[in-house]
Length: 405
Image 1 (cartoon, rainbow, N blue to C red):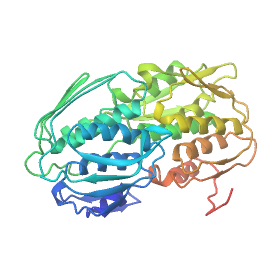
Image 2 (tube, rainbow, N blue to C red; image 1 turned 120 degrees about the vertical axis):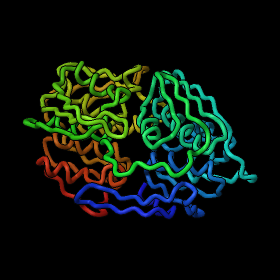
Image 3 (cartoon, rainbow, N blue to C red; image 1 turned 30 degrees about the vertical axis):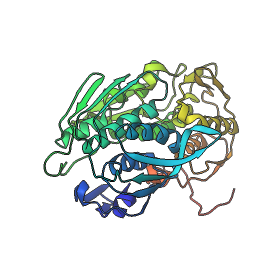
Image 4 (cartoon, rainbow, N blue to C red; image 1 turned 45 degrees about the horizontal axis):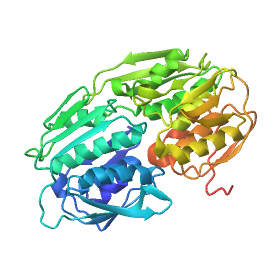
């Protein structure tokens, strides 16, 4: 995201020691839109920029390496086109429900604002696509000449709504209904000096590693524990994990907490399906790593969104390499627990998928011998300090440049 903003003429400075970013805002009207923007492997960057640029009466091309981008962007494009935006991508005959990079955003020609939108997001098992469509509707709504009305069930991640409301936008949310007034507010919305909550999905990536390493006692600080993000915590508590939440101050309309978990693993199978799965941003590979800590007689069941189908096959393959049995079932992915047994040492190629790479690293901490994980460059886009954090917790990890599998 930082690199993409810099391509748009936004000044961003990163203080690595303090973990802070200073962004000098220029307002949406002050962006200098280039002919092409590289979004890298970040799905958030691709979703955010495509939604905003579609209403800015500009022409540009977005390049993306996001693993789940094609399926998500097909749904996002449909949402934006309903407002009159022009967003196109590449099609493939064997994947009719996917839209591939590069993505072209074209001006509407007459400079007219986008249309109002009423959208209903009810049912369906793909929570990622559901949330992406809602985000696209809200962000593009900044450029609409009428209200944006959203009805969703179940209610998905509400962080964007709260962020927009905190920035001064006219937005009201009540249960499954969200209404945002059309057109940008006068002046430039500002958050001032703001402390952002940590991503709950990435927080559970670290906690998943702690579950499988004897003697671990790890606390991840300032994690978003919004009710729409409580699914993973509930599932692990039901499975017998001892989780302590230390609620902190509300930040940008979001409730945050320190999450503490100790080694020992769940005492029962993990069930992450149905409505609970819709309240979790924890990746499928991370949930699979957690499920592998369950007792050997327990088979955990994890819901799998349709946009994650390719990642599901890779998850099963990686689990198998470590000696963990898993299989696709009608309800999703079933993972057999390995209990406290040491896993088989493995050589893994994550093929650039950050979730797979972090899952494999977590499993490698429980292996009976050294493991090598290739194709890990995607981690730097979503969690640049992942390796450093694990090292600080005592993990022995070496990083090799351009190591061929």
